Image 1 (cartoon, rainbow, N blue to C red):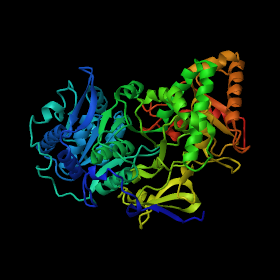
Image 2: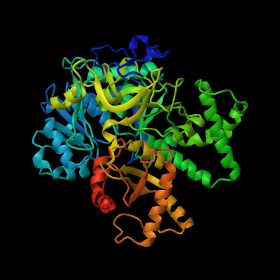
Image 3: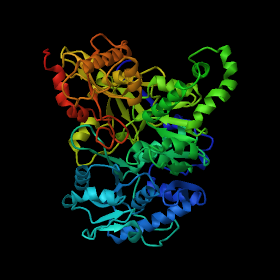
Image 4: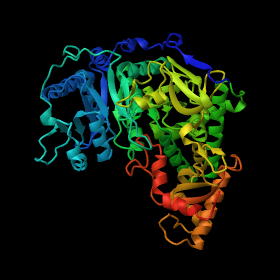
Length: 627
């Protein structure tokens, strides 16, 4: 395809869904506060949000009238602190009703909410507080305050710290609990209390991107940016008032905030906030959601659980599973015009009852819409779930686009791609096949950083995504690489590390992988092993399991085991060119998580941070090799 050719789905060309009359009306000048008020007025008694109360050990919920009352009370608290339209506040809370209250109270008062990752480092919080001149911050409680107190002298812009739970610290005059900060009553009619004159083009939020290097950049999104993205989604997917969303990705990220929270507000569906990622499997079974927005890692975890169950099953059940997946996948390909009809399709009702429904019960059994984004979904993972009847639609976006740019449609789904442009978004390929996007959802720019804005946003509105793509004749986008994540080896050969990492991780021994080799004579990999799987494999092959990089002097046993793992890696990446082969590895004992700072809130690896952590071990691999 010639560079510069444009693809777009304009709003005027997109068919309106049949239930659109249930959606609240929005125009180009609508604001999030206005949208929330309209929803509360349109369906006051309908369920809005539900969460788990650890004290009573019960799930509790609020309807739209009740959430409007809470927002009005929180807004009165903001007013009492003297905050003025345009001031910034920060929300550092877990996904909860309180998060929604804080966000909507800010909008109702004309403020600009700045979401923070709930477990963000104190130095990062201090940087954002000062960069955005944050006036008030919402925190969870004692644990948060203990960490923030270490940088209290760097939080001078703050006039108020509001803690959801009591904090025992009389030395901080700015600190108040939510209960004492919020008045007991306030005007309850969501449309009656006066709001500052805010326009759709005004700044709605600043979202600091969790970049892998340097200081985070504050993405400025307008009300129009966000609501246009919501409208695009609702022109593609039908959402009903009876739908239940299960929210488990952090609301500090625009994927969850736009696609779950704001879309729910406009459509009138309800949201249940999951207790935690470790309890997610149980929450799926309890909540029985109909719609989820997830990152690939969640689907991978459920597939791993299914595979573990299969290992304990009889050979007959294992064959039945493979046959069911193969049949379901063939039906899916046929429905999308990519495969022939097969006689085995006649067996699908039986396979669905005996295999698919039982396995999908792990996800609650009621899912009708599952979206994957935030990272690449492995085709092998997609094939299993789609084969079982869960039509996962992979999409693509970025914070700078509020965030959705492309997504597959339920009846036009190609899991090898991230779908076509969403309605209203134009796409084209720029230099080096980089994806450029333009639309009403593209950011206003970076806060206090015009140089960074100019680097990615052209004067005529084209956003440089930094991702290399191929766009087919139907407008479907396939991500082929990332400009910043291409490894250039010492011999000049270019390697797409993410593709190789996905291939390696298809071997269950490898839980996490990072390929390394910039300007090096050969590729290496840092790997985190799946403890249970590695213990089994090592026992079968008489290998040592003591392989992590701090294990001291290299032994013959360790060398033998590492060579064995390199051979397993070679099998996974044999389809790559000869120069794209991993010759040495570093085995990490520590898993890479959000808590230890090696992953972003959406479970992406912070590549530069991981490289730095294992710098000495990597240098050791190359010490006897020259270019």
